[in-house]
Picture 1: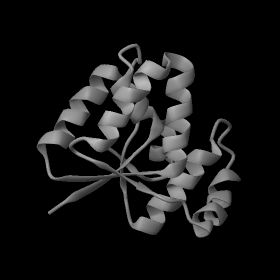
Picture 2: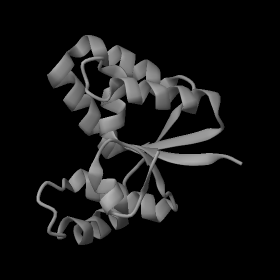
Picture 3: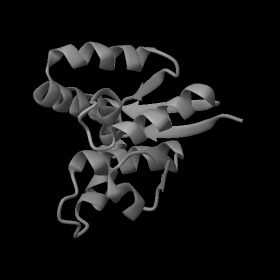
Picture 4: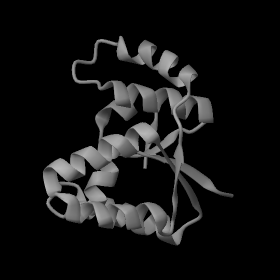
Length: 134
């Protein structure tokens, strides 16, 4: 059986940034993904957010490593956010969590639509939203 896992920005950034506080944890999890039977998914919103964050904080040289990770084994499928996801994200966004990003809310809505409950992240909001952290 294939285990489906959503991949969040905090995890993706940590995998490619050795200066990230979660770098070691991210590599340990990434190696489990490589050795196991996982289907990894992320969104075009997460891809955009991660590319921007990595470029600003670490520079263009890290972007090549990031591209190799996306295309390597295990490959990460990029799911396009649907209008339905954007509409459903507003329900999450209006919750009184102070530092909740709209991108997180998009991810919650997309995960619900796809029937995903597991996520590779270091972001507490996914647990608060009822998802299982990998």
